Structure formats: C-alpha cells, structure tokens
Image (tube, rainbow, N blue to C red; front, side, top):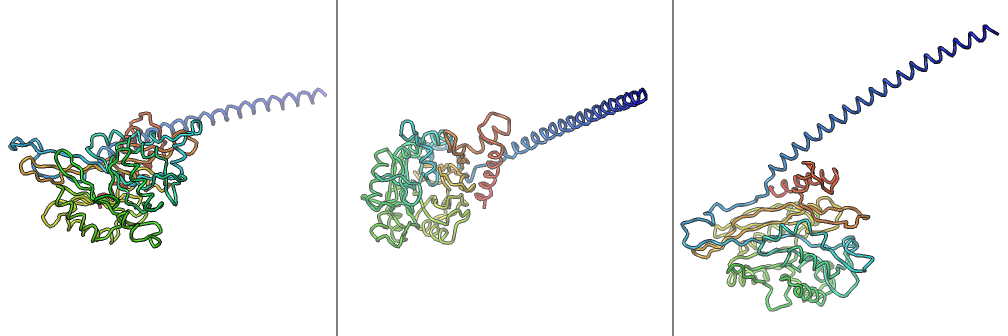
Length: 418
C-alpha cells in the first residue's frame, strides 16, 4: 500500500509539472499571437494611412475644369466698359421613384418632405444666376407612382425648387403619361411654384427666353424618346416637343432673332450608356449648324462625354451628351454618380457679343443610407466628403462608400475626358 501511495504522489507531481509547462507554453503562444496581431494591426493601419494619404493626393490633383476661354479677363483695364459674366448651372434628370416617395413620407404626420435629400449640395447652386434641370415626373391629382405612369407628391417639386433649380424642361419620355391634360397640369403647377419651364408647345411659343444681366438667353428643349410612342397621336407628341428637324429649325431661327445665346436641352440616347449613339451625334451636328451654343443631354441615367466644337462662324459650342441624373433611387452604381455643371458665358462690354467663357463641374453622388435609416437618400459632394474621410474627419459614410466615391470620381474623369 505504501508503495502505491508513493507511486500516486509521483504521478501527481509529474502531472502538476506537465500542466504548469503546458500552461506556460500556451501562455507564451497566446502572447506571441497577441504581439503578432498587434503588429499586424499597426502595420495595416500604417498601410491604410499611407493609402489614404496617396488617395488624398490624387483627389487634390483631380481637376474639374473642362474649358476656359483664352481671351482677355473680365478685369482687363483696357476696356472702357467692363465685360459681364453670367453663370448658369445644370443638373440632369430629376427622378422620384417609389423608394424616394416612401423616404419623403412621414407616417406620423402623414405628410411629405424631401428637403433633407438636397441639403448637402444647395451651396453649389446658390452662386448661379439660373439653374437648369429636367423634371422627369408629373404632378397631377392621381395615385403617386415612381415607375410606369410617373406622378409625384407636389412637395417633391417644392424641395427641388428649394435646392436651387429654377428652370426645368418638361419634355421627356414620361411627359404624356397622363396625356396632354397631365402635361398642362404639371406645367401650370411648376410655374405656380416659381419655375420657368421649357419643352412643350402648349403656350404661345416653344422657346423660353430669360433676360439675365441685360443678356437674352434662349432655352429650347426636345425629347427623342416617348413611352408607348406608337399609341400617341401627333397632336400629343407635338405638345411634348417630340424632336424633329423642322421644329428645331423653326425654334432656333426664332431664338437667333430674339436672343444673344442659345441653350438646347435634349432628352435622348440609350439607357445606362456612357457613350452617345450615332443619332445623338447627328442631332448635335444639326443643332450646332443651326445656331445652338450649348447642348445639354439627359435620359441615359449615366454621365456621357463632353466636348467643345466650333460652329460655322468659328465660335466655341459646348456639348454634354448626358448629365446623368440629379436625384434617383437607381441601384446601378453608374447612375449614382452625378454632377453639377457650371457654365460661364461672357458678354463683351465693348460690342455686346456673348461667348462661352468657362465650363467646370462639381461631382455629386446619390448616397443610399438603406431602408431603415430615417433619411435614406441624400445628395453629397463626392470630392469634399471623400477628402474628409481620407483626412480622418467625421463623416457618415463607410469605407465601402468611400471606395465607391473614389471609383465614381475616376469614372467621371474617364468619361468626360474621352
């Protein structure tokens, strides 16, 4: 029995020693793992900071200037009369899909308010003398719908107006969703809100002329696409300014006689295409040959190339084949990349001639904060928000969204520079 007790004590001592050794070994291994993980995290943070710093440099290098005239500056002291500069801004299609309608609805008060969606970019529109857009929805006393027959709460139009847009085209593929009467109702409501409208033949003239700083600027608008076109009568298509060379020629001749500078807004092209098709180019050629000074396209829900051309008189003409959207609920990443286009035109103090002076843009992005967020959709300054994230400032975006902003900025440059 004594021998058995000695054996048991020996086994216990060995077990204790082994357990201690194992404990120390495990502890050492854990310590090593923790050290390695800490070093890895520190190194990855360092790499991340280096990457963000590099991306910050790239953001600073990105230039949004498209065109600057090389003639004398407005402050030229040799002029006995100063030149004047008129700044116009333009955005793309203004859409109000079902998701946006739902986002603007307050269940408690049973009212609509869409102002929050635009707060992030209103400052970019304020300096402009006039801001153009394309209202691709209707405002009639029918059920609200963001797809098919499009009809939106009137509060949506109010929010867009509050954001700074004050002249809208109503010539789109959805202009006749509710017939001529719906187009007329929509136009009347927008004008009641203080919008100038263009893109119909319901009034005395298809051309809208605005006098800005003693300069008459003409606005024309046409659509080359129409929902259920084959079922529409010619009277309906004409009411929504469906494009034809004959009508465009008449309007351009009128504009040349009564205005100093001509903008044409075109609803054309292929959905989601980042390049213009042959029809767009052919129409652009015709418009330039007949007096257009600026052509602004939309409908594709994507940004398309921009270019400077010369007309028969050797004057610069600017074409933006598509400005994309202004606000939308599209899940396509390309459709979320937007811009505010800024166009300066110069009126000579000497001879009163009006010419294209400068074109640049501000990249913007439709941020989708997802369904459960109080404010799901908001327009943000792409470059400004991306730079804030890169410098560590507090933003409401994730790393995934930050990467999408960088991709969007590269997309804009690649498309616009083509």
